[in-house]
Every structure is written in structure tokens, then in C-alpha cells.
Amino acid sequence: MKKAVRIVSRKSALALWQANFVKTQLQQLYPELEITIMGITTEGDKNLETALTKIGGKGLFVKALEECLLNKEADIAIHSLKDMPAELPAGLEIAAILEREDVRDALISLDLCQLNELPSKAVVGTSSLRRQTQLYALRNDLQLKMLRGNIDTRLQKLDKGEYHAIVLAVAGLKRLQLTHRIVEYFSPETMLPAAGQGALSIECRTEDEATKKLMAPLHHLPTAHCILAERSMSAALGGGCQLPIAAFATITPTGLIHLQGMVGSPDGQLLLKANATGTSKEVLAISKQVVEQLLAKGAKKIIDACY
Image (tube, rainbow, N blue to C red):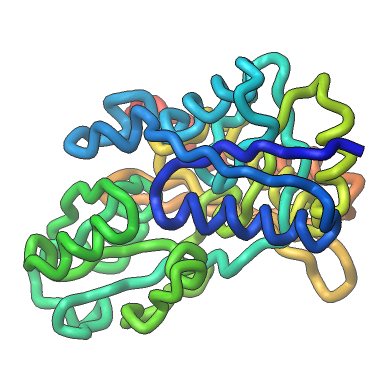
């Protein structure tokens, strides 16, 4: 067995929490394993004033970590799955997908107002087109303003009065013990999550069989099935933070996988939704069904307009 594992991580509080969480899981499995964490700053962390859609998307947060893997400066990288592009670089693969956290989005507001209590023209911060289209569908009188940065930075901007409210993922707030800031939880029925939201992945080199073997016990198969359905759907539609696409799969009480998909116009005037259900062996077929339903309803026209 390998004697040491090097983890590469972004330097944000959430990213380091995720890296340390995986470190703890590995230490419980392998008490003799030496585990180190190397923090780096990605291009996405440096440029906080420009929308992600204009500088390369969420893949910017992933690319620098992947370069460390390919250069053999680290053995594994920990990612929020919703940040990972559909296609991985040659020579890299996902070694494990951890059990999913809370998938919901949440509203945090200065005056402790829920969404329907915010004044007309209230400024709400989000960097996600997926959230934007669904927020506008709920309240078309809001002013949505770009919000970039890590969780602490976003909360600081809210507290300084730059926004009336902001929308963040519940999973990150839970991991950083910040749920006391949440004013309102949005159910998936109200705001469909991003593909992979709430789940963590461990990426490593394809050739590194020893590391892959170490990570195998951390792989959570039910979560992995759901994530595959979501990411396949999003990828087929050209998904990423450039597009207002949502995908969320769950396991039904009978063990089937139920996938919900959405494509919406950025102004919230049009929300196209579709769903399909099947067994874990039919994940790709389920994804294809949802894509075909969305395209039949006119999703391509929305996607082309966004590009």
C-alpha cells in the first residue's frame, strides 16, 4: 500500500474544509497513511470582478488543480462536482464520488426577509444563470447583480449593504457551520439544483492504480448513479455556468432513479422542464430521455440565444 497521499486544494475556507474532510476519512481507513494538503490559488480565485461566463466558466477553479495532478505534484484533487467540466483532461479520472450533502439553495438577507418579502427592485446577488432564471421566474421585479468570490467574501459584501440578499448553496454553508445565516431554504421543486450540487469528487491520474484503490471505499454508489444522470444530461445540452440549466436526480423508495431537468431563459419568462425514471443500469437512457423532452420543448433555441 502507498505510504503517502498528497492532496491539492484551493485555498478558500470551503475548499480546505473539503480537503480536510477527505483527509479525515482516509485517516480513519488507513491510520498509517501520511496525508498532506497543498493549497493553491486558481485563476478563478484571482479574477473576482468578471463574470465566470466571460473568463472560461467554473473549469477555471479546476484547471490549476488538474495541472498539479498531471505534473505529479499531487496525487488527488478534491472538487465540488458542480464545478467540474463534463469532460476531464486525458490522463485524469474521478476515483470516487462521496455521499451527497444537502442539494438545496438558500436565501440570506440583511433584513431577514424571505424572497416574497423583499421590496420591489431589491438587489439580489448570484453568479449563477441557473439561479437567475429561477429567481426571475419567482420574482421578476428583482434586480439580480453578479456576485463572485468565496462564501466569506460573498457574506461580507452582503453585510456591507451591497445587496439586499444573496443566494448560496446550502451544502457549503453547512460545511462551514454557517446555516444560522440562512433565512429561507429553496426546495428543489422551487429552485432545481445544478448538476452535481452538494457532492464532492476525488480526481486522480488514470495510471495511478494504487491511489485509486485507496479511494475506492469512499465511493458512494447511489450518489454516483444520480450524478452520472445529471452530468450526462447537462453535457448533452452543452451545460456549464454559461447556461441556465438544472439537473437533479434522486433515488425513489423502490430503488429507481428519477431525473428532473430544466432549461430556462435568463429572464425567467420561459422554464422548460422534463423528467424520466429508470433503473441504475438505465442511467444514460434516462438522461437521454430528459434531453430529448427538453429539446422537443424548444431548449435548443434558449441555449443558442445564450451563446
